[in-house]
Length: 81
Image: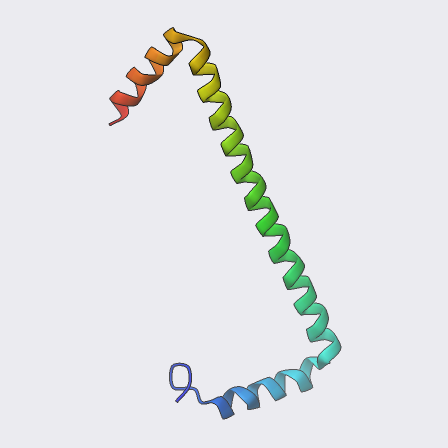
């Protein structure tokens, strides 16, 4: 038994049919496109996380400079809980 009742032989037959229908060149280009899309998505996620860290650091830095803002921020945080 393979994946969910599908045996290895059935998977190989499906793979052979897909290769015959689309050809290896088309499948190779499709794989390359999919790979580049995944890389682009990962880099976008990393950039978003970096921006959030920078904004968080800037907020902490701004609050640390002004004691009144720090007190207001602490009061605001305590009302959220």
